[in-house]
Each structure stands twice: as structure tokens, then as C-alpha cells.
Image 1: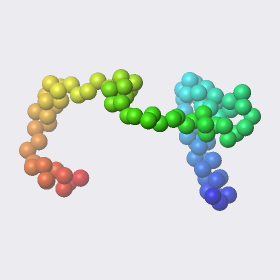
Image 2: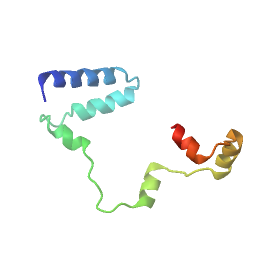
Image 3: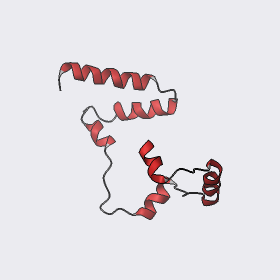
Length: 95
């Protein structure tokens, strides 16, 4: 990575951090970037990395993320309300 691209990346990160308005998020970021228990900056990567599970358990993932699924009656009501008349091929071609 060149010095110019490193500087660009730094500026990008600084602007993204400056845009944050949540004190909680800033405190969490501070804990990740400046851990008190470690003086080695490369340890930050280990704190950010999360181990991949050996087996993907969809049910556990649904519970962990709080997925509630689609409210089918409400979805059907929205479909009726927007009343799309064009064929699917025409709609996809418009994208």
C-alpha cells in the first residue's frame, strides 16, 4: 500500500468516525482501538475477528439475530395496495 493510499484510508476513517453521534458507539470503538490491557496494536485485529462456527445452525442464527419473518397478511395487503399490472419480465427489465 502506498503512502498516499494509506493517507486516503486514514482520512476516510477519520471522517466516518467524526460522523458518529452516539457516545456508546464511540466508547465501543475506543475500547476496540485502544485496549488498555494490550500495548500491541496488532492485537486489535484479534479483538475484531470473530471465530466462524464449524457448523451453521440456522435456528440458532434466527434466535441470535431476532428474525421474526414476514408478516404475510400485511405483505399481501401491500401487494394489493400497489396494484402492479406489468408482467414480471417487464419489471425486471426496468431495473
